[in-house]
Image (cartoon, rainbow, N blue to C red; front, side, top):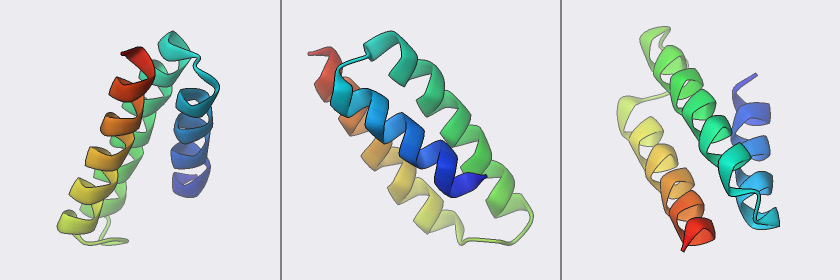
Length: 62
């Protein structure tokens, strides 16, 4: 589900598992896009969540 995908990506980034976090972030991004296309969430909210996940993953890689 959407919440699970976001949580897994966030947890992987926090744990420092960079390669896993990148893959999970991509999956979360896909899930967010699908939710937008189905009208579950607003496009701007999805963009904000994608941005936040990307920032966490990039910080973990640095």
